[in-house]
Amino acid sequence: MDAQIGVTTGVIVADGQTLAVNVAGAIMPATLPVGYEPAIGDIVNVLKAGDRCFVFAVTGKTLDEYTPPPPGTIESGVDKFLAGFAGTYARRDAQPPGWESHVVTQGDLPTFNSSYRGAWFYGINPTRLKGRTITRCRLWLPGVVYWGRASLTTGRLDIHLLGQVARPGGDASPIQGPIYHTIEKTFQGAWVTLPTQWGQHLADNGGGLGLRGTEPIGLASLTGSSTYKADLTSGQIELAWSRTY
Image (cartoon, rainbow, N blue to C red):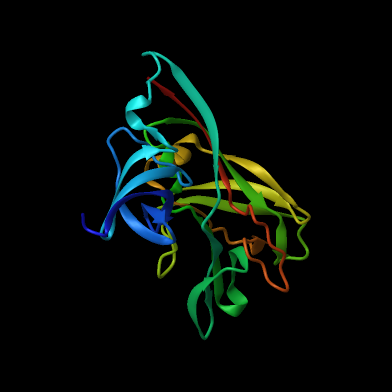
């Protein structure tokens, strides 16, 4: 037998916009068996052949041993997905536009010829729920770290569904929205309910969410900075789902 062929164990991971298997630290493209719905973190048994691997069992249990529930059975659950990136696409006078990750900001500052568009991107992670009916979609809005209009005590966030699954080279593209959400200057973070169809889109395709209002407001990002605090759950989404066998 070729020395590069053998049975081993790996873990399902995200590799850009696709799923792969981490085998002893090497990220390898994988062929998955029909009927297996992979989830990141699954421990799988694989047949490794050269630079590819073939999944044949999950957590030590062969797929042939799984017994589907009786027809008509309704299954439901709730899953949460962290953003892979949180940040802002910034346009400033006399500076090249680009992404920065220390804060998630929306707003226009005409005096400085500047504009800011915040975003969270989830990759394809939510597609582990593909094929299920999304019944609720919620977004964790992190607390305020920047307030651009000191004379106002409340401000409006304009939330959009984005078409990209990962940070693009330029500005992101909204495909639905806005949903308006008013917060106070002292806002510390809260779950916000979004349209169910947005959650269905994320489950079917992956994607992102963005802030594109004109009022200058900055929310905590995943990384923060010496000036702005971080929130490790910034932009997390919660999807409630059901499916009928």
